[in-house]
Image (cartoon, rainbow, N blue to C red; front, side, top):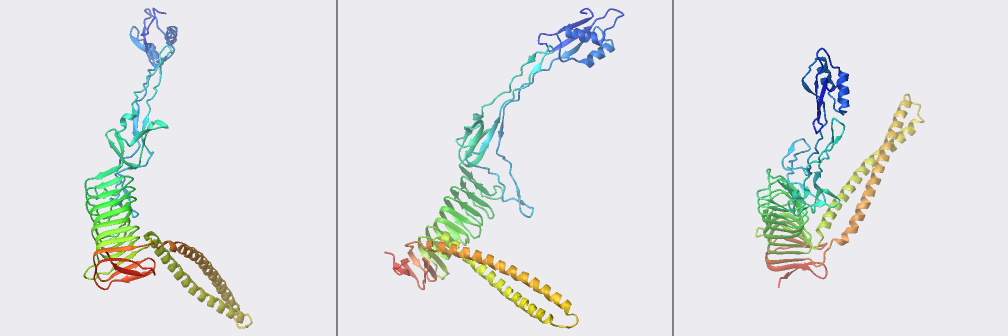
Length: 478
């Protein structure tokens, strides 16, 4: 057999090379080749189609591959998956347009949030030699996930070292393959359509203006070097505006202290404390604790405990109103409740008026029906049916109106009880207004829950406070 069929197997057992060498006039069959291979130890990877073709075409005295091994497949390299999308996510408005104010290009991350994950290297797939031995596979190349940490805001998850997590909330940052969580986001330009609105659990430093229509929302401090136009600024902490806040109704809400150079005609401004280094003009403000300003002209200020200014009002006598000695937050709630109570009472009165008319209709129909029951007038039966239907329909309406009034009365009672509960907490003890310079005419001061006074002439270096009877008194500020 060895003379007729020569088989060569290299040391790595990766293939079997065969040459068919029959004597002159003889042939070699497929079965003979297979038997020869098996006798040589080949049990895997037969190329049967090639063997059969070679035999049928009598390609003798030529070497050909009759069996090949399955080579091992190395494992895939370890990879890192960045879990925070860096794409700009454009949103649609309710009418289907793209909201270019909200680009959402700065990605907020919360404490403990996973930001990157290592996909471990693959183990690979083993191969098999033509003689049946397993050929081991090599594992993929590994990597050190810690090399992807680019700052102090990232750490490996103690529960899973293949995951990186944020140590604190902040703004996601990736430079190359280095990632970090920044607790301060600095914008060296205006907040406009290039930047978009920013909502971030990080300190915000804006080296520019905040344009109309945009939002800055943060749990931490916000610093703005320019002007806040009709834009929203909300912070649970402190806000500093180097220039000013100008006309508009977009909310300014500061949990801590708001420091600003000037405020002009702002209709929605709330703060824990307020310092206006220059002028506060024609604005509606609510301040929980104290206000300090160089000048206040026009508008209304609701202040908790203390207002200190150099000048109050102006020579033209523009109406300026100060309500002090009340909890601004509770006062706002009281006003909302009072409005809701007034609306409920109005609705109840309107329903009662309609209900009375339906009651008259019901009683009139009943009287007519009673008269017809004793009548012998032709056609009275049809009229009786119409009156009975009208009585039934009116009865249903009266029942519906009655149910609505019950619901309103229940809501009204709840709101009145809530109003009664918070009213005693409205007043703040010892409120005070200090004017170190001029108080102009037409300044209205309301202190506490009731007492109110309006200045009629100019005064200097004065203070406003409550006397022992709870009335506003104006005294020299010694």
